[in-house]
Length: 169
Image 1 (cartoon, rainbow, N blue to C red):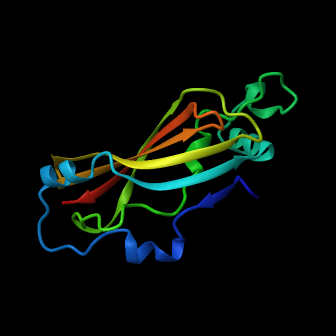
Image 2: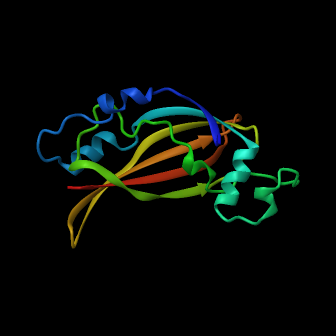
């Protein structure tokens, strides 16, 4: 099953070598925020397939005909469709190692700005949107928020996906 076709600018085999710099002890979150928030580090293109749009909507349990019937006059991608469009690069080159291990997925927030139509060519740019920490019962956790903004062929913003990675400080 093909959900989309993508042209990415970062080869996945380079992931381990380029995703994060080596850690050299504790990291000052304020300094990391000042240096990295807003930095663009990944660019990708996606061609949106109508069959993939239907499969995604059905997998989400959608029953609205706009999302599951390609013959509907307002057929469009489900608002959460862009959450699966990833290119393979998780962090900018030389991004500091924060905490131990790889981290866990802290969830996604999707903002649908405009309908996404079958056959659309979307261009996505990924930035570091936020870095913050929270302390709870299990200690301090660091949240790294990546923002992927999708624009259509006319440059109109159609979707924004914020993805949170959680790491132990």
